[in-house]
Image 1 (cartoon, one colour):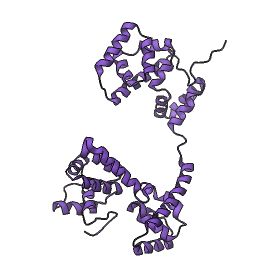
Image 2 (cartoon, helix red, strand yellow):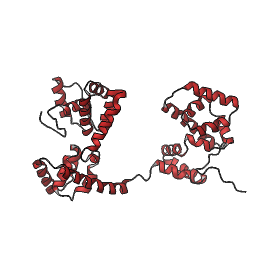
Image 3 (cartoon, rainbow, N blue to C red):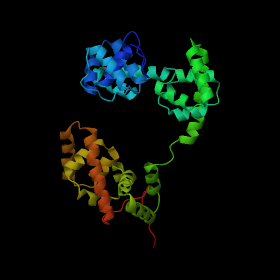
Image 4 (cartoon, rainbow, N blue to C red):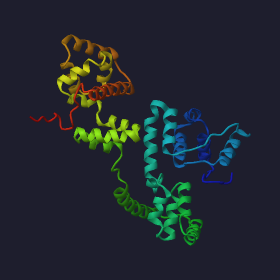
Length: 340
């Protein structure tokens, strides 16, 4: 079959198999993958990890070759490392760990592996002034869609020079590839780290408001809430988490106990620290504490998602009690300061 797009179909059928699996529904693809010998699971999943997108005409050609007719339906086929990992997990179940490790290591060891998901514009900013031969080596070692984006962004004269070198390129020495890779990775890591490191976002706002005085916190949240109540809700959820309950004074813990059912505490405390469990039980009667311990024992193993859901309900109760003035949530430095 002639290459028609960004997908190179090789003779042994590995990439054809990858295209087929990418064009199927996830569960169906996983069933087919599970029928392959381990060495083919590795080869096909690696091919999927290296292909981002499959044009419709290539899907049709591959599927027609497999089934000998017009496919009844096609989905938008997409690949990438996460898609490959998902299929391996579904196909191999509890036996997937070793294959996932091999897949990850193989992708990371590929030449220019750090560029596999990089925006072409970011790559362009680092290689536009390089020699056409260097650019050609880079383009030949990134996914075709990324390579095309890099090529499109070059000046026309340089495009032609790069294309000529790609067309004439035979085997390139591993040492030369490694040298180009190291130099480019070093330059990109230095600049990208400085320019794009995470420096803000909702978690940063929550951290700042956690250490401001209450008047400033209320003013900020009230004004934000006028335009974006969803954002305020997200900030509030990050400002006080379930484990912070142990920072409450005993009086406030007792107020909270009156508003939370024992079965809720039993579920929520399954995923908490010993310090928080002791703080809650210390503020209960001996009988109530014993009942809570029994309920926690009866629950056995529980899903983390279920525990976190109940913990969040209790956090919401804390916030409600604070807003109504029934308890005082401490700042990050512990006890509230008093003045005469």
